[in-house]
Image 1 (cartoon, rainbow, N blue to C red):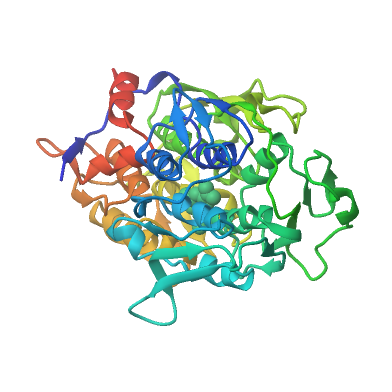
Image 2: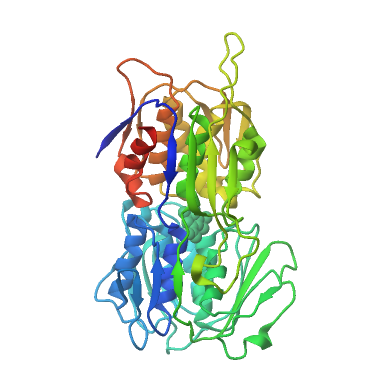
Length: 483
Ligand code: S3P
């Protein structure tokens, strides 16, 4: 396990092109695999997670070479062994939706961390749609975990279209069920308590599928009889609804796509740029989909509004244009906040504490680790509510943040579904663990930059190499910006 050290630096300056969006890359690859010809995808994420999706697709007969996806003629092929999703929950849950509609049996498996993550949330609704899904009962409670053994309905035919009401907003579960919905006859609807990231809906439209979103209809064609399925606002009893209509046989057109930069990777530089005094960063070509950028709204409330700007944001997004995957894209320009003057005997807070509500959490779900780091530098008590889902990520992020940032002197408590961070604190160098979690690794690295200098001591992040799951080269970029 690699131990990487991080120490306070001078201003961070320069332009960064963050890796392609991980969420969009998985979806673009999977949808292209279902199209009736080769698609070209530029700017795919380079991390290990998207590599897992490519490897799994390869076993299903899909060739991905130099950004071109070649689906097999006649549909996906039965794999000759288990599909390895590695550390990637998105790979497993999204592919589960596709495999539920296939006339062959396949097994999805993952690393030790992924084998601990909850899968009943996809296994149960897929069974209700008629798929045969075998999962491993979890050691505690009635949860189910990987490996998942999946096959479509017997005798082979379309799944049953259904309305699914999710107890917790989850883009992975929503996408799994919409992908299964492409293989179901009729209208498949997913209702979430709060809207989660809508990359799937946007990309489906680019691939020519009709998707309705809370009653807003975007016509893309592709499905015979789709028009007959038009409905009004499907949100009858609260929540956010999206639907796809199909005759059971996905009909996706090949496309050319360019994947925008990943906001979740940019988030580390946004917080670092704000908190390392004198910094000036340009993060070029980042996806700023409003379902992903809750962190910007929260940082603005915390007093950073004037220090973060979006440049080149288009006035409108063409839903059918693959050029940016139907997503708004902009440069994010960040400058360091002026260090506040310390009152005597106290630590200066450059930000103000805030309350992050449960409704906001889906829009910043992956940014909670770096937001927690920012909150350690804010004056007052920051509370992040309704964040129980963080316990089911690559690590139990609520517990991991409380213990690891706690080692660096942060005042941070984890409740069952919340974080409470009291700031500002002068962090101190410590030996911390990434917990096998890429976003923990990078959040702790940025925390290391914010520590007070202690001669001969640096922040040591054990297992830092896991950052490569989403951001290969993160360390090198940091060094370039600091030099
Ligand atoms: C993702 C959705 C989120 C997020 C994950 C990627 C996606 O998970 O945390 O990193 O690509 O759909 P949930 O859907 O489980 O909240």
